[in-house]
Length: 551
Image (cartoon, rainbow, N blue to C red; front, top):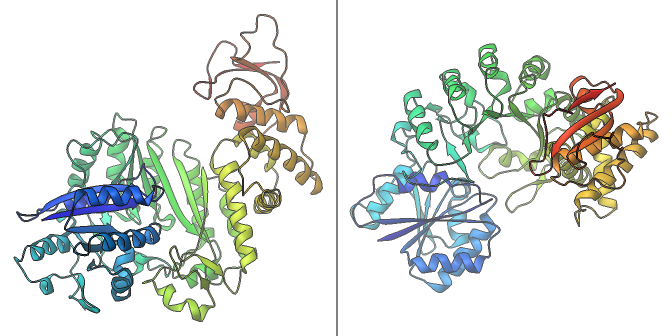
């Protein structure tokens, strides 16, 4: 019997670890298990053709909020083309969709929760080796009647197989790894709040799996643990990864409240690019954190986060969520400014998703939270934030990602916001300007992004009574352009200064009259000739005889 495991991933670089777990479980003879991965951006007629060509008896979909609507369409088409084909659902959306989801999608089977053992027994049942009613963790439909088998106990993580094939080539893709399942927190907006059992994979097994991943060609290994630094062997694993001779980056999600002095001490030894950390802060307002069952005194963890961001070799992401219960636009402004002041490499501004199966979903109506009834269930208004407030934040998020999180405007943004105590207001105003000028509907060209920032920043700061020096801003923008655009020319609205005779070949050496590297290091502006060598092919400045300053 042929079973096709399939998923519509959000991007090509992603690999679906859930499908790989299932196909690597010991399956009974008589089951041919295949895997096909697509993305949500691919043409559905092509995806449909690829599935039909495999002629499976069962198609198993991994269902998430980002692919739900397209999976639903695919199931409708598959059922129309082959009424004998069976559909199996798994993943977060399937787990909490239950009976309604089976009937709505006209699917046949649904795995609730951890799927590895359930899938293994499902395959036995499909071969007639056991009865379908005995498969724990499975729901199934017969006509319009849905049956729910008892839930399955949590697995020992040593029973979960290594997911990637020995010969699998992950060049250009992200590899995923689990060192634990479960979460110590009970955040009301998160599906993990329903998962009570926190389990850890032993360190020797983690190290063996990391060694295998290093042979796949991947450049990024992302640990998908909800709270990695609660793992009792977190420090030991970091020591091992830091000592490796590799260019692979390892990504972890941390809880700021569990960040210890020992963890910071070990992370300080990491070479550049080895460790990337994501820190879920969500809000710095105490009443909001209490409302989501995530009590945390930001004043107590601020110093730890500052210490973390002082580790320049560590790339840090910090997360905020807009639209949480009890949050207002003014509260969110404070949260944004609190976190922006920490200077993370990325400040990720997300929006509340009221996901079925979470405590918040049960309380949303009582709390006055209105959200989309369709995936991704994003909040549309709350008592503290109306629809217009949330749209304003969306516009601000777009320019935050472009001008701050991208890292492509680092010098310019450092200068623009150097003495600004309310960066939130700047990004919201810039986002609104983008909206009014149609730039959110049709993206400007590369040069135009620089021109827009130059003109907007001068006008904005001037209007606030804190004018910027146009020349300094232009020099910072020129530095950013040469460092990130990979072009040998400079836009005509950014000044160029003649090189001294014998000063080098134009196009490889650029003269600045503001020492931008020193400004980035110290925050102080020095007007002096500075000659920098850059390589437009690499998109970076390079050491050389003329680099440095001339007074």
